[in-house]
Length: 438
Image (cartoon, rainbow, N blue to C red):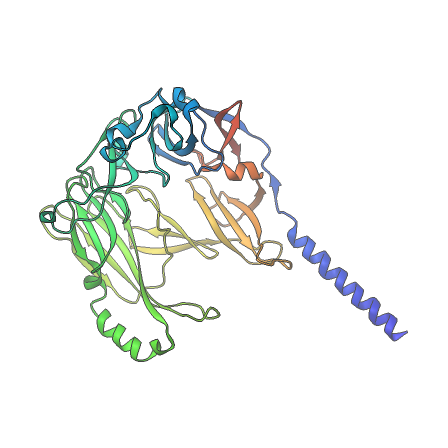
């Protein structure tokens, strides 16, 4: 009798555990079902696997993505300039245009009418990126082709990639051999039409780069000496003590624009453990504020021992006059440009009773959207994925679901902040669908 009761109790427990695991796997929120087509690409479609970038400059919108093309795509491509011809390194490549089979980057532009016209295309497996001066008065299309280094008499300028320039919001492009942009520069921002800032990892250490002539010439300041003048002594003492177990020190950096004359950044010194079971430890975070002035070296103000800060993505892009949000773990932070501090605005909600962390996030004036992940009982390296939106800056969150095809083509939020935009294919063309969040 006791054995039967024990077996019965065990079966109830197992059934309860399985039921709870299944409950955790159930998606939260209602699916986004309402949608409307609000745009169409007048030209070759993007590849379904292409990651497409949408950037706005006033009423002008630019879409950049990729497509593997063959000779049958040439009639559609030739409606707009083949920009390879303007870049010497690309134009010199021997190829038969009628047997073309390569990955091309397509640049489309629209002005709110719903029709996106092909503005040009350029080859390159690694993709292209776009940087604009304030209000998009000048746009720079940075190719994936490294530029040949200049003569030794130029000193030690940053490395550059071949670049095209547009002064009419992308309608026409021209090769710009003087612009020095692209990898390995990080967080490049135009503070004015001519003043540009960036970070660069250099053999001598982290450098702050400043240009006062529209990225033609750069001056460099070694940030390690400004922010971490004690680094050499600290590193030596670390190796003599804590570093005996093989752990290492690492220094990470961020940089954000404040206005046309100022920027702020953070650097944090981290102990990197070789033990996979042990977490890395941030030992100290320091803030550096920079003021720029024509004809003079940047002025620095260093503040040690500030609270830990969120880390930006390596390919993050910032603009001078837009608010700055970052996420770290489950928290959403906003940069207070007035007092140069990060303020935690919200945390992601629990998912079926489990804490979540944020994967991707999109922010607008009217709404925020986050994509979260959470453990569940049957995880096995798989996590519950849930989307949430908020209209009160993270005080309350509402879960929702989006179909897989919508997620694959997701562009982010529309200009109003009221809906998500996603690419789709219809009758052989790429279209843009709008999914209201309500």
